[in-house]
Length: 161
Image 1 (cartoon, one colour):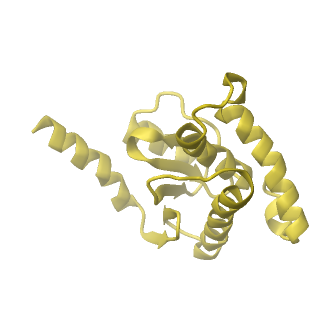
Image 2 (tube, rainbow, N blue to C red; image 1 turned 90 degrees about the horizontal axis):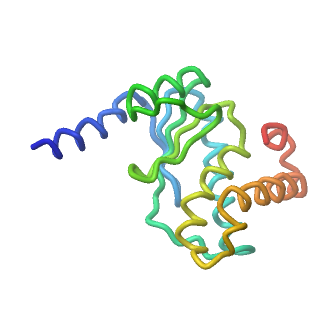
């Protein structure tokens, strides 16, 4: 009974998001700015495709749930209230127990690439040197994603990284 109520409580947070967009690799939940979320979703799927093609096979139990809050304050308060995160980060967080990534609209695409790399690196690059943890790989991928975006001419998105 206790386990059932914990699972029910944990899923109740989805009711706060009025909109949903499913992509190949992600399930976005958000409240506003559907055009902006659609652009982030295209970038997100493209990022995983790039990983698969150029870096490593990004196997995972897709889709990864993505919660996009309105702003930093709403994001941090949401994490405190719904997931009992005492000291919420400033930009984004991946919560492995819930297989979800939470962030806010203006956190930037670099936040997205960095946080999504955590579960993909942990699952797919288990035999990597300890010095190449997901934080170090995330920093490298952030630099690479900036270059890839500039090369492809998506200048509007590169400003957010």
